[in-house]
Amino acid sequence: MSANPYMPMLGTIVETFDETPDIKTFRVVLQDEAAMRAFRFQPGQVAQLSVFGTGESTFVICSPPTRMEYLQFSVMRVGELTHRLHTLREGDPVGIRAPLGNHFDHQAMHGKDIVFIGGGLGLAPLRTLLLYMLDTRADYGNITLIYGGRSPEHLCFKAELAEWAARGDMRVELTVDTPDKLWAHRVGVVPAVLTELAVSPQNAVAVTCGPPIMIRFTIMALEKLGFTDEQIVTTLERRMKCGVGLCGRCNIGGKFVCVDGPVFTQAQLKDLPQEF
Amino acid sequence: MVAKFLATDALADIAAAWARAYRLLAPVREGQAVVYRPWAKDMHPFLGRPPTVSAKEALFPQTENLLTYTYRKDQNDLTRTEVFLAEPLPQEPTVLLGCRPCDARGRKLLDRVFLERGVKDNLYEARRKATIFVSVACDRLENTCFCHWTGGGPTSEEGSDVLLFTVAGGYAAKALTEAGERLLAALPEAPAPAQEELAAKLASPAEPGPAPDLSAAPQAFLALFDNMDFWMDQSARCLSCGVCTYLCPACSCFNITDEPSGMKGKRLRTWDTCMSALYTLEGSGHNPRVSRAHRLRNRVGHKFCYHPQEFPAMDKKPGGQPEFSCTGCGRCIKACPVSVDIRRIVHDILEKGGKP
Image 1: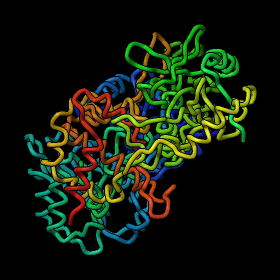
Image 2: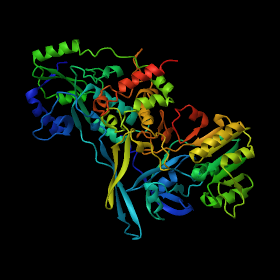
Image 3: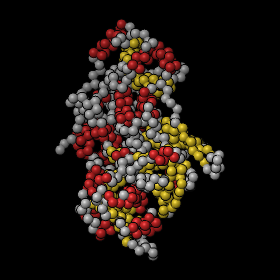
Image 4: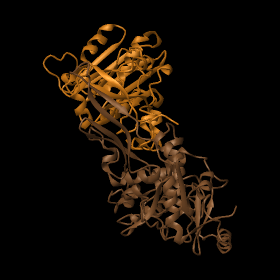
């Protein structure tokens, strides 16, 4: 007889802090130490986080598999579950079903230049891959991050943005729609910055995530720069429940975002019925 | 094999005997409807017409417990609360009495999702192994029936453990599986006239009439996918009430919700419906299926395009049709308050999308 696919592992929140006014980061360890040591995942895979009594929702594991002291989740407060999650503190229990879904094909990106293009909390899935690549830096060519938000206070992972910019082995370009007096970076939307930088598609892969409208215009900009459909990688969001391809709701045509995604190339997306 | 016999006047006693060894779900009349109920004393099983609801609830209940949780204070650190999880109770062996061949075929379509797609659903699997389907062969087709369009028929054996044939004075019972044989073991053999009547029925079953060739439906559907005018027309009268999905023997989408009660509670699975706007509504407010047209398109597409594409060659007979996620039971047509007819939609898809 099979195991119950809906039974979560128990985890404990070990750290929580605010990223923006409505985004909070949670660091979680599994309560079973042996299970935590044995836990393996790939960058881009997601988890179902439970607050028992409220429910479950899907979040990307935004820490990389090369840093296994904890699993990190960054969560925007938008609905019932995320409101409840935001009230949790260090020491509180949560349920975790993970790893779920597919992942970024980082093997196929070896030796290539990588362009990360993120907006808002869309940086979360990019962060897991970016940190993984920084931890195995020699395997990749130039790494560029173009990251934007509504305003400086809406940017996530702010401390790390400065750290990455100071590393010297990657390029960081930040932009906001509405700057404040202290803002020393670009102003404008992400796709415009991408176009202005004229990033070369030569031996490159573009990985993008953000609000749907940003992704749409980013893909248009990438296509203009000469990126092919196979060179553009994105992650999709969908309302999910079971996370294992059974409950039916995250289908796009015959594919399920929870098991066939969330990572898709633009070539794969073009093969699907256009219902996003 | 000689058929067994269930005399009409002994039916309640036979059911009562089964109910001592199994959980028995029997069809009973409630108002205008025929629904399955757990066996109770003085119940009268009604096999006279197809139940109003599908048989899927025997394997995939409308509401079921996925797990229970309990919060308890950590006695070593009273500033903390711990949580404990428990598995649901095991499944009881069950007999479902009185479904129709179209319902029994639905079992195979549920298997595709819950057992064959990828991750196995252990709760479904356990119930599946523990449930015996006793179906009643149909003597005639109602004007909403179209089982023969999708590979079934009024005497189809697929998915049933026992098939009952209406004969004078009762039912001649044909066991189709070992579980079915065990269930029938204690029953008498059918008397000679009943045997003869059964033989005659098997020799010339109810003639369902011609069926259209739906082989081109998946491609025709995709050709029409972006034609929103088509889908607006098809869904213009739809109310998004979802009754089509709840009564469907093949619809298997579900929701998961927590039901707390003080410091403990249950995580429940309930039937859901892709006809609801909330089904795909995301936290951000974005909804990929924003109108009834999008939602009806998804329901029809799943049944006549995505399912056959996902399970392409299974059970495909030479020259036969692909497998659709529809058994042609016609309940969605019968129960629809505004008479949306899925046969008409499929017909229009073939007509408008099938041409180059």
